[in-house]
Image (tube, rainbow, N blue to C red; front, side, top):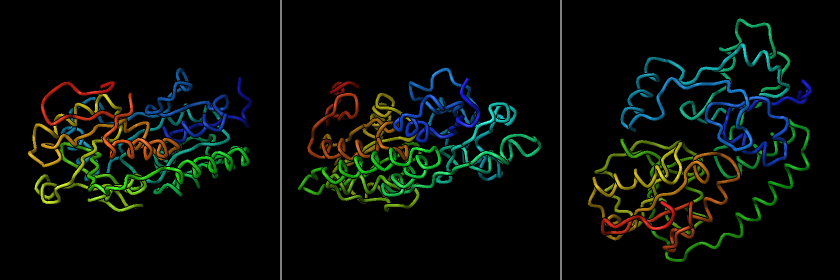
Length: 308
């Protein structure tokens, strides 16, 4: 058994990733339903979503919109299990109510339980930029008692970020975090585009992602479209990119500049993968595929190159 003071519950996939990066996987006692780090397999799962993640995107968007209008939480937390696990540290987030559990979800789950929450340290990660992600890493490391390890990881990530060689052609880039309906990338994604040498046509660093109409997108006429639908890996994003190619006649489509990427590993989560995401994006803007991480849909309906 993990000693009670050592127990950490992560209700956020990016936090689980960071905990394992910090070498703390052995202290993780429970996770969320979305935590897919290989080391977390078999751990108690404390959350579930009221939305079917396997449904078509339009249905997911409709269900989320209806829940938000009704004032319903998208996630539930098993308060009894949280109480039984008796963690010393519970990690959640306050960036996006759609993406993951928030502190309010935890408070609701344990409202009528005499258990762990009053004595546990609840850490809410708030990073909305690359610098914010590194600050979250340091905060998590400090809360877990490995502050020096966190500083070293953050410094290494910053060195890698600074070493990225941007493409010199400055292509105009549209990132899509959802296809049906289209949402453009926000938070740290515009920074990733800029660091890679692109000009981000929709969205500003540190701000939320947002909805955009296809007519608005057509008017922007991006040189490159990168499909990075939140919550999906490369294979699924290839399918969403095919939808973009099928439904639009944009110049980027005609020029064979529609790309799919592994959003979960590289773009969607506020974790160290965003640095690798910017590296991959720089290669994308050079027209180069990174096997298993990105794939280009050519102008003609031929099979996708790479691992897709």
